[in-house]
Image (cartoon, rainbow, N blue to C red; front, side, top):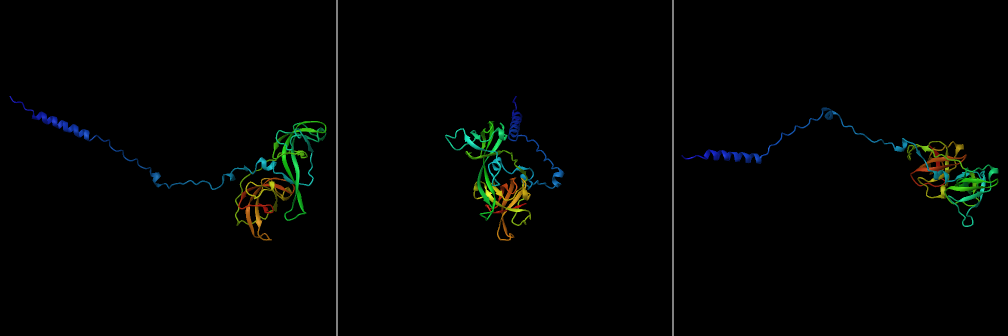
Length: 289
């Protein structure tokens, strides 16, 4: 009897074809439907946040100067400032003439003049006379340098031993002593910037009569001295406009910058240039803002 293999071969071939097709075409997962966008996001307009235009300094007070600006700058005082005593000797005066931090010096006053251990004194030195702008005879006062600060270590009846604790420049024999008074550095808020089109404030005006260390040119962070003070209504932290007159009447003027008052005396004050449009010099005008 003859066996028939055709159907089996056909079945095997069909199975092979089916497996090949399955291998050639792997199964695919259905694609996820896109997430619908919320209706609010489509219709609501975009909101863009803008940074504030104010400077940070206008929202928080900042110190207008540093200790060096108030303690090392000096000041303009009367011709004969009252003093407590004088430095008449030093521990190492045989080997050098200049003294600084850590050096020991001796004064010509002691317990009889009220000195006590622990007291602090400002070392001062009379310097040149300061004249009114444009005059060689009318004086504003005498400039006093402030080279150092010293603390009393011990006292005798008519003398005292002091140690120099802070120094801006060398101290010499013959320098004078006055009681040290702390000077608070004023905290200010940045004033509105001026432009050349701003009118004069109409407030008190004065002049720059001296510059710290007589440095030139004068610009931002320079320390200057004005012929205005407490008697003119100025207080630490006040701002002044610095300008230069271009005609005798003052109706035409050029804006140069801005200054802030550090501390005041009766008719003078110490100020610091806080902003600069152009370089300044002794003789330029200032006007209270």
